[in-house]
Image (tube, rainbow, N blue to C red; front, side, top):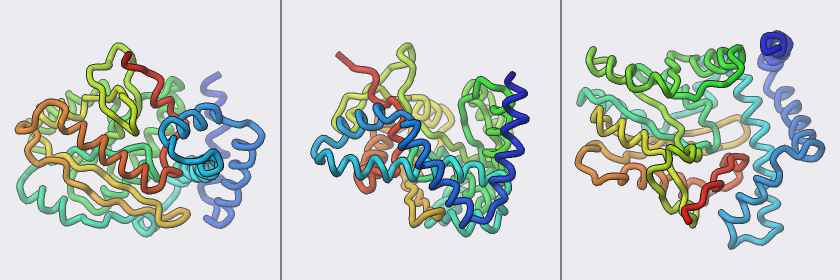
Amino acid sequence: MQFLAYIIAYPLLWLISILPFRIFYWISDLVYFVVYYIIGYRKKTVKYNLKIALPELSDEERLEIEKKFYHHFCDLFMEMVKTMSISAEEMQERFKITNLELLEEYEAKNRSIMVLASHYASWEWLIAINLKSSYQGVGVYKKIANRYFDKLVKDIRSEFKTELVSTDKTIPLMANNQRKGILSLYGLVSDQSPKTKQIAHWENFMGMETPVHIGPELLSKKYNLNVVFAKVTKVKRGYYEATLVPITDDPKSLPNYEIIHRYIKEVEKQIYEAPEYYFWTHKRWKHHKN
């Protein structure tokens, strides 16, 4: 059944991916209408998240953000499909890194980098950074249950010199790269809620005590990685920019949880600037400390 679903979906996704962008976004508008007005995909979760994260706004203001979010959400899914066929030249045109000189500075110091991102704007197209970097790009991801779609997602995210590695194989890969002196750029999107049994630390995020993943901090200290935050902004439909914000170049000198604290504060600032581009369908605040 999994294979059947895959062989039905794959040709359709490929055909969509090769459409001109003008037609491509017409389809995204249609998808938005179906997802928002007919299916109502995770509307309750989105409304709940917006209400507790942005309580100072009126119902009308949150509704406006909600609709803008669903438009962006559909564009994001479609743009992920577009990655199946987009050229390197067009990707570089649509996703720009504003301060690549920071990577050159770290490379001159022979240091690998951990790039922390959030589910904001277009984290999927952050793979474009590898087109302008001599680092070995590595994206850490969580496997999908359907092994055929897992392969599809892995193939899509592995475009443009990106090596995709599942979370359970991250440490062996980092250890191997360090042993062989392979300068690497490790990308992690770490703002989802950890499983209950994995909760080890809480941070104040959007005014609420929230459990956070501490893996990025542990790994950056273990392998002495420079840590940066990829602040992605949406310039206009289909166009993005990312600025690499330094978090630390000496992770071992910082007290426990300081790296993750700085990261969470950067995510927070990003959301307050334009909340419609955050991934509000996540059940981010499902755990409570007390």
